[in-house]
Length: 219
Image 1 (cartoon, helix red, strand yellow):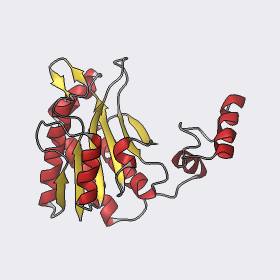
Image 2 (cartoon, helix red, strand yellow; image 1 turned 180 degrees about the vertical axis):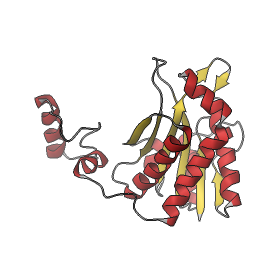
Image 3 (spheres, helix red, strand yellow; image 1 turned 90 degrees about the vertical axis):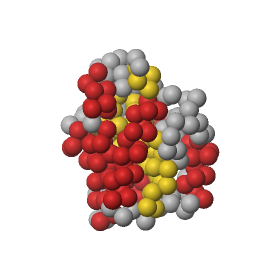
Image 4 (cartoon, helix red, strand yellow; image 1 turned 60 degrees about the vertical axis):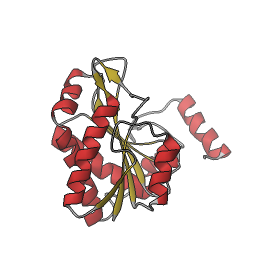
């Protein structure tokens, strides 16, 4: 088993900056701790970067692809203009069931262990999710723009790392997390891009948008 760990940003790209804190440093700190944990569990690891250096998105994908890694885990921090925004969300590539399962395990463990707000598993065609050939996830651990979340990121990077590792181990030791319901199937296909309560009403505009995507096909 070989896992690619991708600390987001680095070098000339600091990512989110809040005061004296830079996302690239927080991402790297969590990633290095995750590497230690996985190596202790006899799981091999390849890093897209292990220090503060500039690595572009395609280089990150190339490292994972050329090493034929089994899973790709990209680590990031979130941010928003409103400080009240907070919580954890994990992304998988649309139509990737294996990526979605890993994302769900990791998402659940971070929320459980760090008590962050559960923003759910989401599907996007982010570059590193689209251009990697193995199941891949991108973890938005917490919001640097939220004071409480930032404190968690600074004080408990090892807990974030442990949560990601536990999620991965549960995936490797088990099977599918749960059966995919009809709404999530539409999300994975890119037909809808938000979580819809199955008991709620939708507007005609939302309904029309879904129909157009079906008729035109999705990428």
